[in-house]
Amino acid sequence: MASIDAAPSPPQRRVLEAVKRHGEATADELAVSLDISASAVRQHLAVLRSAGLVEATAVRGQTGRPADRYRATRRSEPMFVPGDDVSVELLTLVEEEDPAMVTRVFERRRRRLVDDARDEVDARSVVDRIAQVTELMDAQGFLTDYERIDDNHYRINLHNCAIWSVANRFGQACSSELEFIRGVLPDATVERVTHKTSGAHTCAYDVRIDD
Image 1 (cartoon, rainbow, N blue to C red):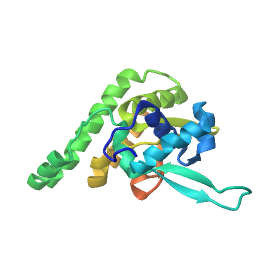
Image 2: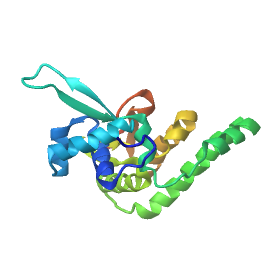
Image 3: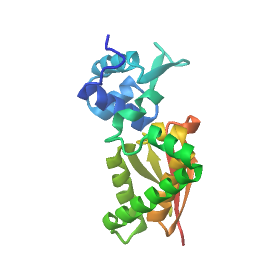
Image 4: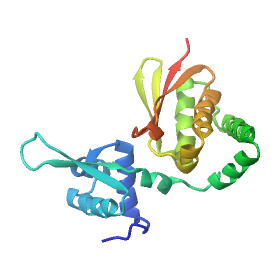
């Protein structure tokens, strides 16, 4: 059995990422999306489960043996963060000195991210810019994708939180991410519809293109 502190192997990490992107999935569903055998997926899931990175719920009411549906735990959130850009400890010290300074720090960070993103997000179409914003956030460790809901209505899904420890301590972090997306998509109405800190599998943002 793997140690709870051991880093997942590359194949285990791939399975964990697939679980996070699905939200919830059975081993058979993961096997299809990963193009590997279900038995191999179950072996990786067993290790991830013993490490506290995934949990399972038996789904009854079907013929045959109940199928376990797997979902990632909160412990998995830091696994996909490319670097520690902000420190809870430092922000806590700043808050002790000047609580208003924390809000100003996050606002300055948001403005910097928007300015940097605008240099990279150069598409004229709002839809193309949604795709580019998704790619940028995915590269930052958010495991991001987007989907088309209907005409002029899209949803950006963040399957991982790249600033999980900070977001749990400072609500300004989540507000900053929302305002970042709004800043890069000024010709759309952006609202957060699900929130990982509230127990959802994703942070999801509805994007409605303004007429």
